[in-house]
Amino acid sequence: MNFFNHQSIFFTLWGYNMSYLEFFGTLAGALAVWLSAKGKIISWPLGLINVTLFFFLFYQIQLYPDMFLQVFFFVTNIIGWWRWSHPHKSEEDQKKELRVSFTSKKLLTFICLAGFIITFLFGLFASKLHLVIPKLFQQPSAFPYLDSFVTIMSIVATYLMVQKKVECWLIWLAVDIVATALYFSKGIYFVGAEYFVFCIIAAFGFIRWRKEALSYAI
Image (cartoon, rainbow, N blue to C red):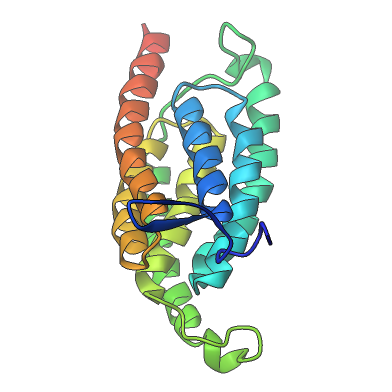
């Protein structure tokens, strides 16, 4: 059994072959997202497990932009872990952790616009990977532009989440909707179902964080 091979089956449920990578990667990711919606710092180390396993999974099913995204997530999970637990005095909440806050409209508009432009450019790059580096990427990228949207806007959402900004959950919701369709179309149904649940968690996270941020203004 090769744990890191997506062809290594952990169990079969209703005719669906569940790999070790997909099951444990999805489980770690689900716990990390749920705990982040509740503002728990432990979500970051769990996220490290999730992104490591998904890196191997996405490489093997030719979702290359998503594969690159896991490298970014690995680094930002470490940064987020530090940022939430070591805020400046003026940013502390009652638990001495980073306080939830809103993003300025000007900054939010800028980073979203930049995100859409970079999405197009990265999608163009991803669509040519099998031609530029054929030995490493032997098959064409699947859904390069949609996959790039998930990748780039996840980076935007993660940046805002590291800063504990309420609006991160609205961007996560858009990302999760696209990702749900993407993963179902690639046949990794367990991951697709997870991202459908993420849509619900993103809505919950937005409501919870918005309420908390507003409470500081009173």
